[in-house]
Image (tube, rainbow, N blue to C red):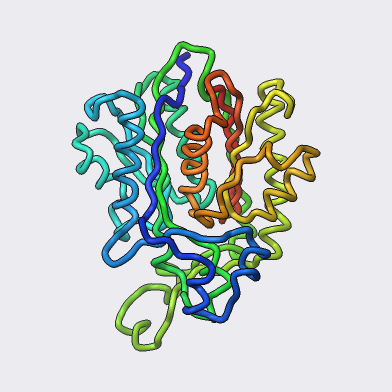
Length: 331
């Protein structure tokens, strides 16, 4: 059976930097309140007509360039996103067109903050079975277009940023590559972190009536419950990856978690009995970029020399659904 390996990565974020101080002009908040609560100091937000695909396309091109593959070699495109340009079709269709790919399969998945690890797992299975050789996996978000940037929506608005990260996976006979992936969901708690519409349930559609009623759809989060579950599920799914591969935390060079909240990362490190520097964090610069956070962090960790050839790393995520996931990788 083939093994899949990540042979190229790339990321792209908007030029527009929004600091905590900038947010004080939009809502009743303070830079210290935001930083203390989340660890975030600034984030990137799209402007004007800029959309998630405008971030995904350059991220994908950078990954393709690093991998040294041609667009003709890509066999499948999987995009992780909650903020596609259109209700349908997905960003994957735009990537297939804009990157000049063959008429290969392309689809989006909606597993929220866990979606990039889910997408890596899906690509890994296609490659392991021999159905495809080379896969493009992208996490891309423009969540700032959906948040309420007033005092009423500040609990959510201050957290989210925009960006995209991409990876090229390719079949490999090397011992390096994707060692295992682990995916989970617990749907009974979905309303603790959700966006009710637009959707097909009840009157959650955008139509003349709901517009006249002034119905607004925006994300909702029960922060206390999300935090409580995240600090349990992160250690569980990281340990699952370790156990599957007969590894200990000492064998792991770096853990790259979803960048939801610095306090969550700190709590998980403490629960697992390791120093915080075992966990990569860049949330202070980008905020929570949902499905894009792990690939952006992975790219920066590689650029900074914190992930080197032969290193064992773990990607770990927790998000809406609830979903949670991990991937053990030998770089």
